[in-house]
Structures are given as structure tokens and as C-alpha cells.
Length: 267
Image (cartoon, rainbow, N blue to C red; front, top):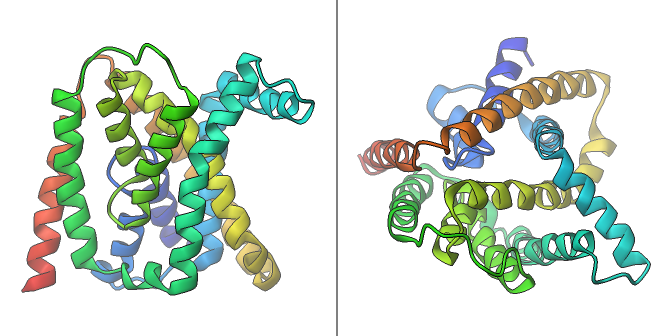
């Protein structure tokens, strides 16, 4: 695969993974709309690894707390703050893992990979994000990231298996409906991405490792590094922008792209 192709794929994944505009939707659209070769599973896993390290670095304090919490849970210390965070993230990941396995076994995931589905998801869930952002209470949920809220947000996150929905976007939507203010909703969505990306990587990584050759491994390493840099910049941009701007610019982008895709799909 050419360096240019790797750069385009890594840039799309890195920028769109954490912005509420759907990375999976954009990666599916790339070969469909440009005629480029599909990047394949090796590169898909590699760019996700790159974005994983980016979010872990950006939220390194919370990431360290979650890993300490896993140790606390393994030693039956369930009441520490770290343990509660780790348990909440585990609970939030369970729905997307279950639904993801069902989709993979039944073949639903392949059936959803088309322009019409992405267009409708971009449009509909963009409008839902706008509604949650504008009319959700602008006060942080008084109980914090509780286990109940983790389960609710986990169910929201499972919807993101529909291409074009956006994992971060739908999780932020759910958090805004629960009453979290914008930056906290985004922070929770980003933290929830860590176990989700890990679970996705484990699910598909074994097959990739078994089939990859040296050339594919080299391309994957390049793509991972590029995606890491793009994701880190994207995260910093969004979190800084949220101090003064709502999610409306992303909603406008989603609606415009959704309408364009639907026109293409049905024309």
C-alpha cells in the first residue's frame, strides 16, 4: 500500500475517531466514493491501535486510575475511586461487545456497510446529538459516573455499531441527555473508547496477526503512528473547542454529509 494511501486512511481514522462524525462511516466511504483499494483488516486494526494510544496518552491520569482500579478489583477492593472507575468502564463496554458479536455471527455488520445506511445514520443521529446538546440540562449529573449511568451509556454506545452513527457522538448524546456538561460528556466518551477499542482489537487481532506478513506489518506500523499523531491533535482540538463552542458545527457537517450521501444512494 502506498504511503499516500496509508496517510489518508490514518488521517481519517485519527481525526474522526474522537470527533462525533463517525470514523467507521468515513473509512467505508473512502473506497466507495474514491475508487481506492479497501485498506483491509490489518490497517484497520493498526489505525485503531494508534488512536488507542493517543486517547490513553491524552487522558493519562484517568487511564492510570482505571488500570489501578483493575488491580483493586482483582484484590477485592471494590470501594476505591479507582476501582469504581474501572468497574464503570467494564460495565459500559459489555453491551457493545455483546451486540458486536451478534452482528459478526449473523452477518449484520456486512449488510450495514453501505452508503444509504451511513447517510441515514449521519443525518438522524446528528439531529439527535443537536437535540441532546441544546436541550439537555447543562449541569453535571450529581451522582457522577455511576454504574447505572455506565450501563445506560454502554447501551447508547452499542448503537454506534451502525456505520455512520459515531461511537463518540452517540455516547456524548447519551451523556448530554443524562445531564453531563459538554466537556465532561466528551471526557467520559473518550474514556469509554479505551476498553471498546481494546475489545475490538482483541476480537479481530488474532486473525490479523496470523495472516500478516512483513510488508503488511510495516504498513500497519506506519499507519498506527500516523493515526496516533492525527488522533492526538484531534482530541486536543475538540476538548479545547468545547470550552467555548457547542457540538453544532459537527452536527451541521453530519447533516450536510448525510443529505449528500442519501442523494447519491437513491439517485
